[in-house]
Image 1 (cartoon, one colour):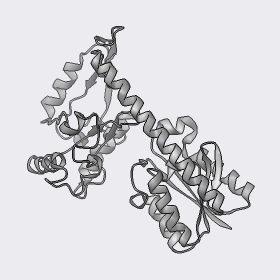
Image 2 (cartoon, one colour; image 1 turned 30 degrees about the vertical axis):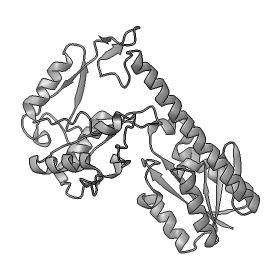
Image 3 (spheres, helix red, strand yellow; image 1 turned 180 degrees about the vertical axis):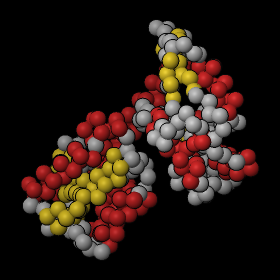
Image 4 (tube, helix red, strand yellow; image 1 turned 120 degrees about the vertical axis):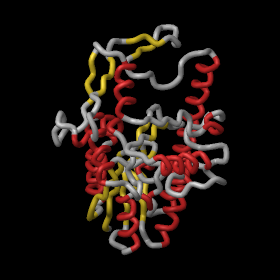
Length: 318
């Protein structure tokens, strides 16, 4: 039986935890060797969120195209969440693949390896996929409840601003002496003679300058617009990405509307009116204890200059 492997990793934290692309690849190769599957290829999606539909990922499109062309009889992945957003997404896709004669093999689903080549395997997939989704939902509920208790007690919730630590009372911010100073470019950062080709924009961390000084330098060089809360009605309900109407604002930037996502629509129209050289989307996730930063990637009108600015920022940040 011919097989194609699929791997996905969205963050460095996943790589450090053993869910990186290399670790997934090794597990898939070992599994195929044990099962006697002829592994033709391993398709990967690096730096892609699990919330993105399979058909919208570069590697996902390659995989679906290979299945349509009947290149393989089986698809192998390490864990359920590497490919699918939830149990419903998994079961719908697997049912469609089965009609084309393609089986799904999951190396580790709740500690068990399963495949859909048999009725028993399909049954186990339904049960374990449902259990995995229930566990994710329980984690989300517990996290939301814990955050609610902290807010009710007046404790600080969320990421601490750079340069501060949290006092023992859980509320007071204490400067830790590690402040952020920004070099202010004389004109366009890419034309500034102080920066070479490999480090156009450089962040310098010192203990001698306050954070306010660094912000002043930014304001001297640029007009700064901040939308403090892109999701006012949704955030009041405890949602980080979904507004009160149920729209996931992360996925609305391509085609927003006043009816479904007025928050994104109005912000994007304002950006078009003022013009934007550089932008950042900073948001959290209901189930993951991380703050995500997205830039200008994927914007159709993105210029070469904006791409260069974004790369400079990424290099300085990393």
